[in-house]
Length: 127
Image 1 (cartoon, rainbow, N blue to C red):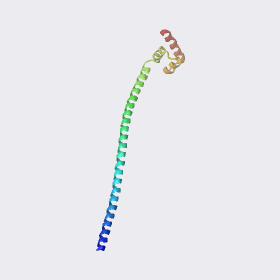
Image 2 (image 1 turned 135 degrees about the vertical axis):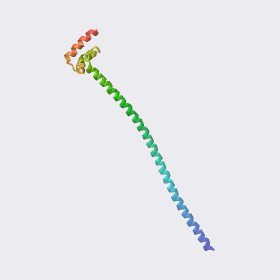
Image 3 (image 1 turned 45 degrees about the vertical axis):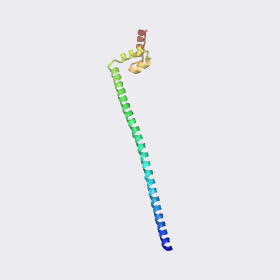
Image 4 (image 1 turned 90 degrees about the horizontal axis):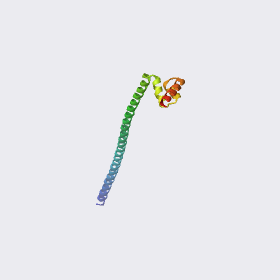
């Protein structure tokens, strides 16, 4: 009878030990699963933030590109206006705005003497 009790006790102990080991493995597996889920969620949040940031940058790049196209069009317009009119009409306009002769000569591709003459003529008219 004592042997039967010892056998049953040993069997219960072994079953308890097996259940403990199984539960411990399941708990470790569950913890790994939770950690993987947390990491996945964190990566997902980071990717969402990066996507939002890149979308904002894309919009800014498009806006900057439009501004550059507008500026290029204005530059072409000013350049064609300067080329279509004689350099002297633009030089006269600059002289009337009290632009120095050196700047007028450089901007209008005329000689310094011509620019000085235009400045003298058109400053006298303004006075």
